[in-house]
Picture 1: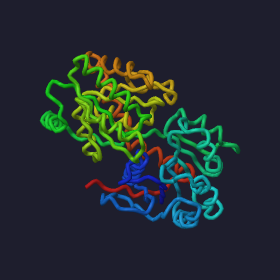
Picture 2: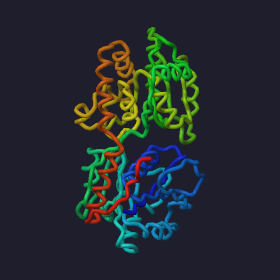
Picture 3: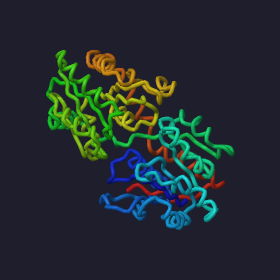
Picture 4: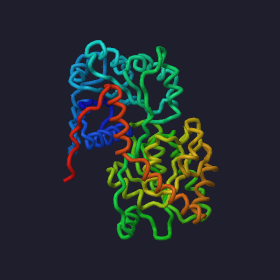
Length: 382
């Protein structure tokens, strides 16, 4: 099976969708799929991958439609990752599937939709030509489907919910290594460390977290907050947050590799992820925290599915509420039994959210679209 994945954001560009695409492509390659990623022209990150990365697109604007279509015509299946910052506001990716259907009807086009529920209505409107032209739709969050289906005017094509796995591989961790990593992060022996991981935006609740952190330290809590992430753009709100990263008891780890992210998560005792829109099943930072066994305090907001409590054992607090966040964190800091229960549950989550399972579901869906099982050469383990 020859698969082309089209993505606007890809490493070294900092992006959750870029990391998702990289890990998905690796996992599909391990299942014997011939994978190529098509992305923007730019600097190579020097990472060796088991699949081909074609950094050939000058842009994803209408003037490059023919170039993208010519490349796509070489493949059995094309998978568009949507949305993506680097697609910009150009309508190209929204019209690409319809154009490809006319120019290369043999090729099966698919789209993977991320975060549909949190899109503004005008961004959902932009997806209308794409959703009504593709041969198949993948969505990563079960709660997204009603929103996606509402834009499928001519009937929904074959579709599948395929949840993501963590973007961060869990490294082995001995007690000696953990002590070393804690020391590097400035975590004192008696301190409890709270991890925040992800690209830094105000809507991720970072301001509320820093406020809760300051209040808890004022109350005498021996704690440190470790912020693992960076800004992907310069905006007026960036500098005030940078200044707050210098507050007492705060450690900022920018530009961390995924290996370093795993080390930092191992070094911490719990995670706090106060998203303004609420947590969901496709929050890769939450899955990374749970995969490292961290009890996790997060938010129950508009994007949070009703079944979240049956899927994950979390401490849920209202969004945009620093006082409620403070109380949620304090409950985990002070209750050893609660921390133990949450840790055991988190480790069970890691066992059932794997990239191998995600890749297998993709293969089955693509074969369903092609109407046949495609022979694959699964690489031998070395």
